[in-house]
Length: 205
Length: 205
Length: 205
Image (cartoon, rainbow over all chains, first blue to last red; front, side):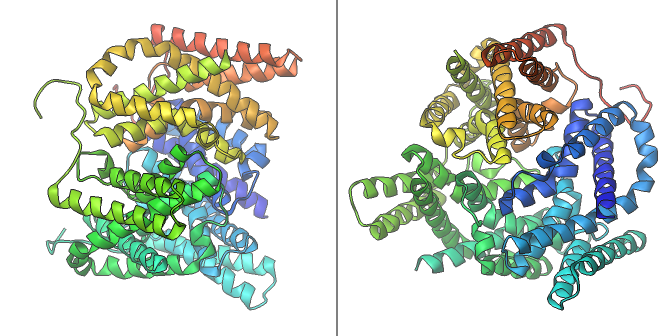
């Protein structure tokens, strides 16, 4: 089950990379690199910060093969990829939930304090997209007013930590953390829940 | 004493993150992330480059809690933060001095050659701001003509290395390195000392 | 021989950094930092991803001294550096070949699957320039339609892997991988071989 979610998340991340590359009119090298950055960026930071080696995409060759093939094909079929975009919201939310909880779990295992562990969950779940946006010379969407994303990840990570502390079995705690992240994210997208922008002047936008 | 400087530096870095986020009209997630990037970016690169684990902000949970709370509050009080900005020059200069000398010291301890150690001091002292600017889609201020910053860090790092080589006790060498960095930085800001821009054409600016 | 190529590649990377800094009208700090980023960025990512310590530029102080002196001088002599640019294509192609093959070799040694090893070769050979462009707020040239670069690196890495698999002696396999990368790169520059941009709309460019 977790493995299925992981593959779905990697595939949807890769397709987001292809779409971002097509919006920026990059070539196939840009498409492949953005797909890697978005799919592997968050987990790579987590592994480097926690000193986990080999990195998850070095240990399992299937991830990079899938991303490579999808991104290379997608670069030559951008309009087909574009048509798939509406179907990516669910696998993306599932991936956000899974990576947030797994990042938190790995950080706790590595001996990190609980608060740091929840931040590691958020980094794992969200920083692939941040790295992709920074490479593309965009201010990351994660930081601008838009439907809640990091917040869902943070709350899912904390639910997982609370359930573990309450001696709930690990499998249930993982499921609970993922479920809360996914449900919050899907509601935030539908309702347009977002934080306001901070401003230094008092002018209306 | 060093601990007090460290907390002052982390707090002023976090507030710079809040201000940068407000200038770019980011939301609270952007404010928190920029505060983390500016406060922890340089030290994180140092720890990764030198293979020091756990990272300093994983080992000590207080740093990330302070940054998180300040940045979250600051995002909703940007004008109050703005009014604090004039008071940040001194804690920022102190932090530059402390992190430059500590980065150099850790690199020497890890067996790095002296020249590399001085570079590690500069990276530790200055790269938080560079990472913040890159995330915000700005050419880092550190690299454009503006009051000397990396140069003060480099000279402070070298004074520390020279004092250690002259068998000055570590405490005095650290104090000397920090003092020189802070004094040079404050004079550079006041006098507007800066390097000129390199240019390929002969036109006047 | 390999050492000579390595120094030539580091020198040409450093000069590219100086030129990029001059184009962006940065000061000497920008020039030095970009020179370091372009010369050391790809190898540093490789060493971090593969957990190789000390990093190659920490182990050998000569690299950082050369880059520092060249970039500092170059910042004050941008037009002289500019005049050297036509002569950088060959050392740059040699460096691309060398770093691609060495990155692949180190990854195989570290136990990475062959496909991941070839990607590590490409990262080692090409990501210095990507990091430099990202710092300068440019969409990396590597990802936009322009003469093949990452592709030459990828094919050179695979030729090396195939020759090793065919029990060709290591020295010959390295030479073959480098030679193919260099020849493909020089032809791609001369003929203007490039991939097209992906586009979402059907408009002509």
